Length: 283
Picture 1 (cartoon, rainbow, N blue to C red):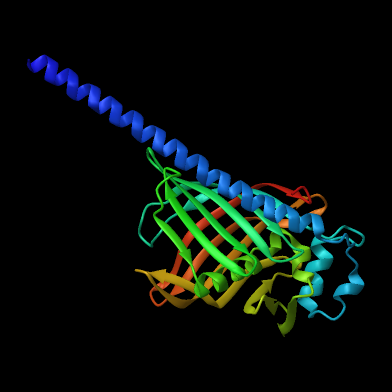
Picture 2 (picture 1 turned 180 degrees about the vertical axis):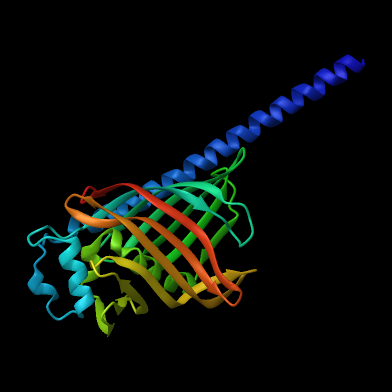
């Protein structure tokens, strides 16, 4: 009798594992299909964006450090970047003091109108967490799904809209011609920095870009990014650092980046990224 009970319990356990596996697989498929549809929407933006060629005459009114940047990273006659696809590796931690976790990601940008999709996976031992960050049509949204299936967060609203548009602006050094778009205004600060303001669908965010003597963007800072703490949003100072420039398709871009909050207790890094591949105008 005891053996039969054990066999029954073991069979029920295997059945539970099987059902759980099927549920996770179905939800994972639906999640990934949703992202594929969102990427297709970005491809439509890219396809409808007119072809243009970069010219130094287009940046003559920009502050000197911004002109220095474009002359360093671009060449006259190069096509404007309509889309960019990035492959990333790196480390991530949710909070100061927590262990760093390995991260891998793909990111898709368009410049005809501001939009991006960031699809990332963070691993902690046998557990993985998928994240999808998005800015599209003036709306930001962050989805977090452990095991690609269980919705742990679905952040949206005015604060996400602003923060997501800022993320687009701060990461534009990966597809430089976006920083010469008509919806971006540059204002001089000093010989090595300038303020960029981007507008999109009634939203407006600004950031200070710092350049080195070569003309490379080394730092981006803002006080207009929201940080979520226990379900509430607070405006805090944020800094992104860029270095190790490499050439992709004749364009110089940073391949290493660090993202950090500048809090009362000091700077708190939460992401360290390395770009391993960039493909332009293939979306």
